[in-house]
Length: 231
Ligand code: C5P
Image (cartoon, rainbow, N blue to C red):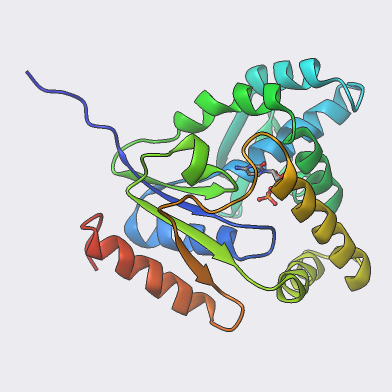
């Protein structure tokens, strides 16, 4: 009798601007694994809440949105990543700083987190999953074979986010962005459910003074050492 094996999972957690989105994408592409951008799900709940006129403090309705929203992660006509909510392309809309702040607010609610739990676990599929977020290694995939916690100084993270938003044509001032990131960090680290923190068995990588390629190299080495993939 054969038993279905749980697909392998590598988790990459860390605060906003630590580079986990970029690193996770590069690694998933390099090893041919699926990718879960869990932050996008929280951003989608916040956006769907605004679009449906849900009261900003109505946790229960936001949890229902989290359970029922129709989301498709795919590719757009230009070959870039595309996120659709109820059939509508919301790729740019969910990346704004406002959506990030909204996400951090709804993400503090236990009912919303519970509603997204199984949805997130559903992304695990052969040959494997790279899961990017805040609680991937602590709550969603506690049995993951490789757990990375990526950090960088708050100054460096604000600079990175600033560059990222400017490249997308968004005009946010650096001081305002720094304040926003500090607020979001504080809320993410101090909330009662699934606060942002490294899992006890996570490998912490400080990316402040090293390049994206160096971080990717380190993570690939760690996975290869655990025989998750070959280099
Ligand atoms: O990673 P990203 O910046 O897209 O996440 C947006 C917000 O969603 C975070 O500030 C955090 O509050 C929340 N989040 C979370 N748990 C995750 C991923 C994101 O609480 N696994």
